[in-house]
Amino acid sequence: MDVLSDVVASMRTGRASSARIEWRAPWGQRFPGRAGAAGFQVVLRGSCKLFPPQGDPITLNVGDVAFFPHGDSYGLADELTTPLAEPRCDPVEDTDLFVSDFVGRDGQATVTLCGGYELDPERVHPLLRDLPEVIHLPAELGRHPELRSAIELLGAEAANPRLGADIIVRALLDMLLLYLLRAWFEDRPAGAEVTGWAAALNDPDISAALRAIHRAPGEPWTVQTLADEAGLSRAAFARRFQSLVGQPPLTYLTWWRLATAGRLLHGSDAPLHEIARRVGYTSEFAFAAAFKREYGIAPGRYRRTPPPARTNPPIPG
Image 1: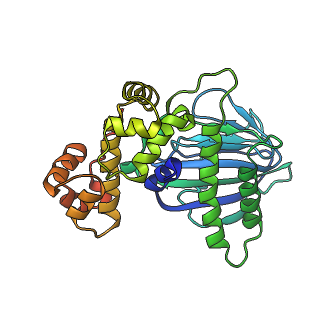
Image 2 (image 1 turned 30 degrees about the vertical axis):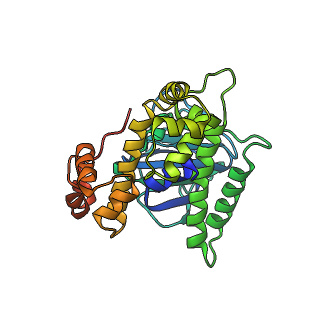
Image 3 (image 1 turned 120 degrees about the horizontal axis):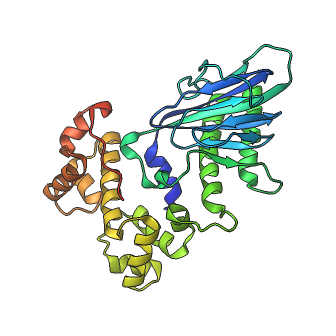
């Protein structure tokens, strides 16, 4: 099991959306923050200034990507001095692909592709916690060719929607999210020490143990058997896992088992004893006790309760 794909699949909900927007100078736009969402901006033509949630403005040129993993508010404008208008569009809220001349003026044109993903706050993975407010991926010749291809295909579909565009765009948006995250986790900043999940996913030993957990959460894993998967001694494995992931191996295993159980309760009709078995509990009683400790609610009641009213499980670490 690929850990990154598994994590994204566990967090994604609803339908991703995107919009191709042509801006005419002078223009400025503030995009609203949305809890439980992640957004992106790609410059297809021209350039603009990005006003991140914190810090100095960033110049975005053709092919640059800005990703907002925490759903924070931000602004875009043609120049640093252009005022930012209040939100007139929200690519997460507006679930239909659209093409728009957003500002009908005669100034220089900038074309952007913006979009958003809805993430289930009940399934927030600690992997996201390590990501910065803004991930800026500048366009560089030969860097991340798969990401560039997905951007080109999305831009083409957005500019000229044809038969089948709805399914094609949804698939491309899913690909784009994975390519964005892959690019971030694979890139090691020059001269900087990479820590946390970025380091864990790039560490062949720890990533082997993580793959084992995600591949078979119901296995009776111990620190020793996970260390065997990693090819390390028990003590060396426990120290490195704690250092990179931010918690002991069995703590993460338990959290992921129960997060998986929550997903199964919400998305399947499997009986409780079957879910308990699939996530590594030998009895329904033991599973129910562990689930209630984590979520603050019994699994049967969790299944019957609408998602907005549920108590979110704590993020580990």
